[in-house]
Length: 76
Image: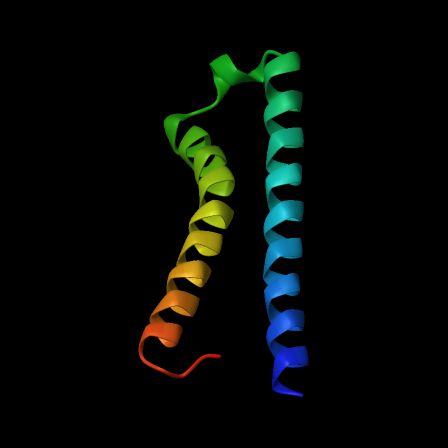
């Protein structure tokens, strides 16, 4: 049962991260094609970069957490 929960949790995190990145890339595409990039304030551009980087960071931290658990003997 524990392995099912672990796989489901990992799959859910990966799915949400991929959907978030896809939506962010779509937003970047729309902003660049409509020429709105020159009118956006810096804060909005930073939020756009953050929406691309945070899912990748989350996946990296999930992997680090899994490695830490294994090294401490809590994993497989």
